[in-house]
Length: 221
Image 1 (cartoon, rainbow, N blue to C red):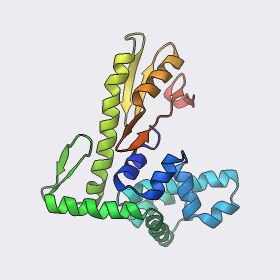
Image 2 (image 1 turned 120 degrees about the vertical axis):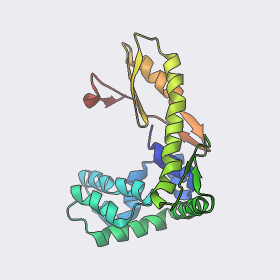
Image 3 (image 1 turned 60 degrees about the horizontal axis):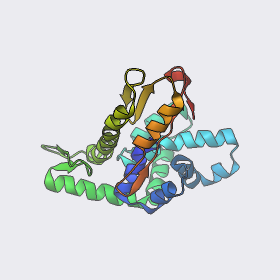
Image 4 (image 1 turned 30 degrees about the vertical axis):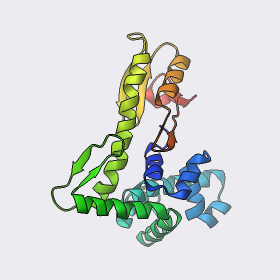
């Protein structure tokens, strides 16, 4: 799936900027880099822009899951040793200014969890009960990653039923991906696109298909 969890966050939070990014078919990590690192992005080369995109990618996910600046800094500093904790704090503050709707959703989600003692996945209705103190990361994480699981789990048997076993098959389900095998890659690509592309929660969920002789040599088709 293409940015499955960020699309779910956009759907749940109804953040207007995130919704516009996906409605326009734009890359959310690239758009975030443009907004958070405006001057650097404007002066950067193509390779430098790729690095800036890689820098903000974990911020997109970490901020949405209530990850604090120290946690996000500890991740970023591995590949970007010049990153300071103070700069990460500023980037995180700016992120929530850009995507203010996500913060509103997080606060509402936390309040619901504290008031009711559980949080719920919007598609399946499955609940996680806390039985004590509510952790912000868990409350914000569960409905997103749980919904991602619901979507891929619904698609998997549809793909399976379209395959010609045993000549074709599903080798593995890995997070938001299905790994299939068969003699005709074009046929498999069509099955995956048809079965996995859905609209849920008012937002389209699309897929990227890659092929190759092994997982390490996959190329987009």
